[in-house]
Image (cartoon, rainbow, N blue to C red):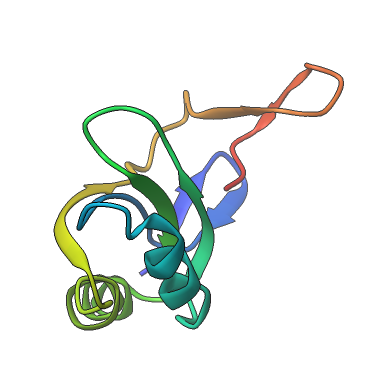
Length: 104
């Protein structure tokens, strides 16, 4: 299933927030690098330790990657998955600060 935002085709995507074991952020980020479909991941401040952006060509592939790969990375304690909604109002901002069609 592809999502369409205007004329932009978007593969199913999700933001996954991750809580790690104490002090394990770097180790978990190394594990996430090995997973195809994890497009970006970064350590963050707050209640969660890492935010990752995951995308796959199908919704089943997305669910499988998050459930069986991301959640199984050593020292991941908890995750919350936020599926990106197909929405015409979604946008991205480019390097110059101008609004563009949504891009992950």
